[in-house]
Length: 171
Image (tube, rainbow, N blue to C red; front, side):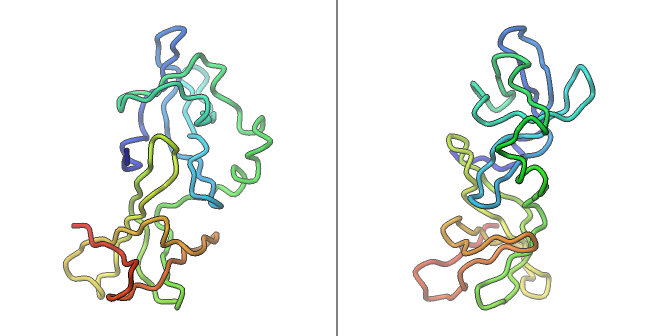
């Protein structure tokens, strides 16, 4: 099932052992190489520090809260050696400019949808520039259209009206 990122953040993390909220989800930790959410940055409710909840440590998500076994599921960022490169990059998808392969500016990412079973980002919602779009609609770009992801931009296939793969317009 696809969910917008705003429906996945600002949710409590509940310990199944104690039955209490132990943290709050803040922002996703995105791997730019494959557009997968590896985990979430969380605010610890007890010690006022930022920790990371890995996707693999989430037992359940019911749309209201994330459920984990216990506080052991939350990790200090420097403990996650495998993800160090991603953590240090601090990569964020929101506001990232989107260009076509032919270097035509499409707009900026204003939202994205995540497949909650796998945590892969499936759709990018791109707001177009005001001059290109007077209706203020946004383009829905499927992950299959993404050609390259850099630190500064996302490059997608050219948007041609008669091509087999085109972006769909979402109102």
